Image (cartoon, rainbow, N blue to C red; front, side):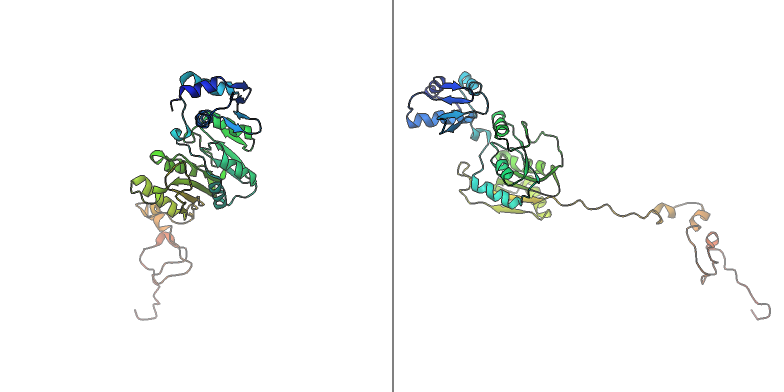
Length: 306
């Protein structure tokens, strides 16, 4: 986003004190809204008690790039849409969090889901690509670990019981992010994710395969109200995807005959597989495996007629 010159002038004239930036004078409302949008994009949050915008680190460092280039990338341009509080609570309810369970919020943004999960007693880790937002989560102190990286590139560790997420939506990124997240969950865990509403009716291969995966896992896709994300302006859903226990390997009896035992092998070896506990109708003697198939040995009483 290109920043107007009057916005840049207001920021240049501001008073900076460590993480705090205070605007000078009384700005008219429209100008203030544009200034606030620019400061918000680089990590500043208005604090009414301090009467200043507070940054995770030094304010002068946060606004340096903005002032040098006259441009800033907004949250909407990054595809980042904060999760409204009612949706956060719904996500946590569906996740059925337990005290002490390990949870991950990938693409964590400002960590609103992670903070609420920690308040319910979960041990929470976060992954966030934006440096300023990742630092904000660290400063908040509710996350055990904060990784400043793209969640699609982080090494997979199957260590979490819950993953609760609001991933990027553009270009079906939500499906790719959720499929990646499933690899971080232990068997018996669950992924709960906000996803684009068109997930329920798109017919491309990626979407159809994903819906089939949810169905196979006996998961659910629940539509949210149209105004659940006012800043997005599109329909959204919540997908709940359990991670089932892996099927046990087939049992193998090492004593059982194998197919290769019946292939071309010396006759004595093949015959040795067959034993009888008592004489059979064919005249095979007990444990007479090596003579299996030989002519019956009949004893004829010479005093009787043949």
